[in-house]
Image (cartoon, rainbow, N blue to C red; front, side, top):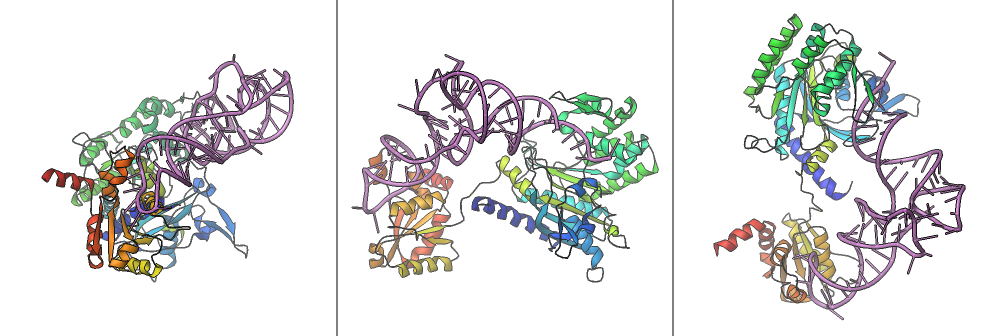
Length: 482
RNA sequence: GCCAGGGUAGCUCAGUUGGUUAGAGCGCCAGAUUGUGGAUCUGGAGGCCCCGGGUUCGAGCCCCGGCCCUGGUACCA
């Protein structure tokens, strides 16, 4: 990964960590490799196939982790003495899936997870959702102007496995396989639309490429019931719940699920999670098999990369590693996908480097002079590089270099400057701005030094700082003031 | 797996009914400009036209086979 991508990535990671720590999650790390037994069977058949399998030199079967949730569950189960519950941690690291790579889908990618073990309270789920929204806002997305007609920049969808289960069982669909088939089809709602989903739940349909697609084969009234459930979109989470309550088949399971969602709604309100940022969406279906309650997912509507964050409650997972059942909930951020999405939405300004100052030297200037200058700038926490390229250090090449790496300020140290104990400091962005409309070579060259001042050494830092703070807008305002 | 579209310069792509020396833009390098970048102008480098076979006087282009990529879709009992 080259510097422009790494700079963007580090920026995003730093923002996300800040939010996680604000919510009281502590950092933690685990090995990339886990014993195969720990990973198999935790995420359903799907994930078993996606495992990269290996062997230790001793012949033990191991595999590379496909997410950070399962290693977390293993950890909680393994150290009951050392970890006092409830326990919450965040975790950043690479995960691996032996899948066919697709847009926004990679074989190795980085996840940034938060998880909380040892509480079955929906308050924890609400905090997960609040943290998701806050992360997305912290990296520069917001929905504040949606009312004014601006597009939705992110959306967190919330559903509950228990609701879906109650619906399908109420419709007489008991078997797990058909259950999953229905969810797979419903998941396509955004992509293919209501009519196509309706067909696929019944007899099947012919898709745009002419392929026949096998349907689930449900009867018309069951399909109607599912569609009626899935298409509910009210203005608030509370209103969605009311409509939901009216349309769900009555049963103990459905009233329990509804009660849980009402409580979640109350908690979200208390956390001031905007109705615009996070909605109840009965059509949300999430793949992983271990979810047992609320599930959540974040999308960036402007980018077609799929979901960028996902999570939910998995009260049964830790029990697979220990006698003690431990309830837990968590959220994963697919970092690479999130960054791809931000870029697609034009929300990340790519930078070529984070260097602030280039020291431009002339032939005949002793290197120790240059290094002393660099040290002075670095002392002041200014990121500085001196040009030590091959060949004669022509100033033209050095300015060209600064331009290539978007270094905003040049500090020029020539024989003149050394002799008189001064430096020349040039604001390269201002220089570009001043000469932006010139097409005549003569004039262009004459105005080469316009953005440049000569200062004594003890004014250097102050001068550089001012230039770093420069923006075209500020320049515009200054000009108009005159 | 299936359907569709691709594979030509570092990148994005053009390439006429098959015609001899394969192009453009961007990028890169150099010069105009020996202490001043990005603008402008001039010049230059850079190609197993995916691979193998075939048709033809002649193939980047047509035919057959393969490989790879992209999009869509399915399967993952």
